[in-house]
Image 1 (cartoon, rainbow, N blue to C red):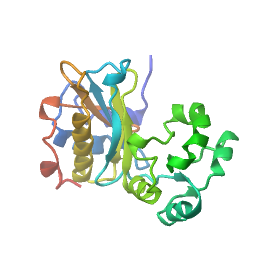
Image 2 (cartoon, rainbow, N blue to C red):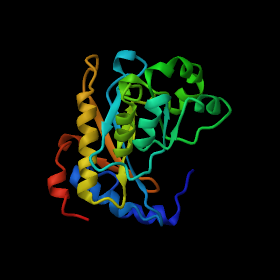
Image 3 (tube, helix red, strand yellow):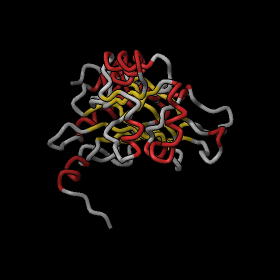
Image 4 (cartoon, helix red, strand yellow):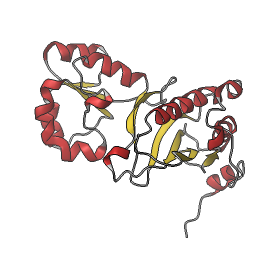
Length: 239
């Protein structure tokens, strides 16, 4: 049986494990439960009433967090010529078509890859490398576009991708424990609004089954899904 350390057990004392918290309470509790010596990420897991084994029930897309993720995102822009110069000026950390060969040789020191449509034929051969890591550029997520400079800026500003996993969860991050409760609540709302917007027509029954917030090193806080959007206005004053 797994045993938790002293820090985790101490953090768990600030929550009631069986209680369903309002979003306002949940963001305050997740901050209180983040007791590590570093700035912990705040994660959200939205459990959906869909069957990801069916293509028409996969929930995926992108969402721009109003206050970003709190993480420095390393962006690779695969393009050439003037587009490469634009991507570099927009803040891309790595630029160039030569990174295709570097990836084949084992280089993967980036968090997001954006590309122009003209290079996608070459990138297709990297599907088995990039796909499982969620790095393959995709037009639906805005990472394959002629306007590569804008794509770089949007990603740097806090745009994230989300997708249902095999158990039908949408796991992603909504910020850092150092964020104010108001900022975390705003980011939480952005994710919830986007997941609701992306509800597949084929989904039947209860769509959002549960939501859990958690610091990266701490216990989960369960959100009352009957109060999905009861959030930011009340939470904002809390630092």
